[in-house]
Length: 114
Length: 119
Image (tube, rainbow over all chains, first blue to last red; front, side, top):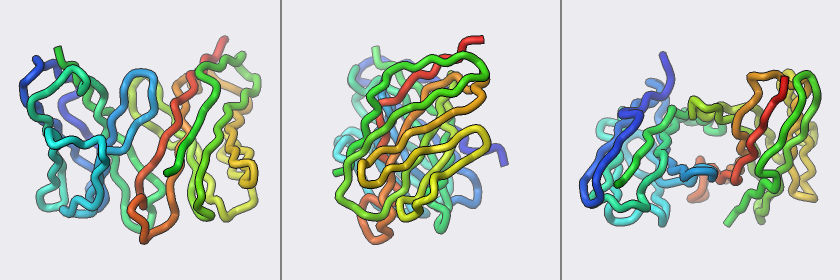
């Protein structure tokens, strides 16, 4: 297993466009997390899934954001009507039940909204 | 809500020397986990070391060790024999151990400390 994979690595879009990011967790991990990291700051929690169920969403996740994890495997994070303030790195992480203190992170998707 | 503070935006160290990165946190919980993560230019967050709050013994992983002071809510990272590959952004993070709580599994990160290692 090569770890947590995120695609694309970079995304440039114009304000108002929709974007979608994908995360493929480590195959045996049932928990999946999304974080957002702005320049010079630590990551901020957005949401997490246990299998296909979305168990918690941060207040940072406005109505323009939606995340899914169909079949409890990969996950997608969609941002509708992007704004310049959405520019950030979006990190995905996964872990397994019983060893939840070990989160494995992907390399992130860097979003730039022009 | 828990908060994590790293008061050192930047630190530097000479190769082979020792450096200590500071972290303080605020929580009303008695059981939790603390972590140090490393984020190199490749952007992937890598777990360096973790500490369970109920354990009095400080965690150690090779050249990395922590000084965990629960009463003072302090959690510093000591890097011994610094190497060029240690250069990165370091984040301190907190996680609740309450399996029934809504914050279970969620990490709260500090602002980070950029570590530069001089040859």
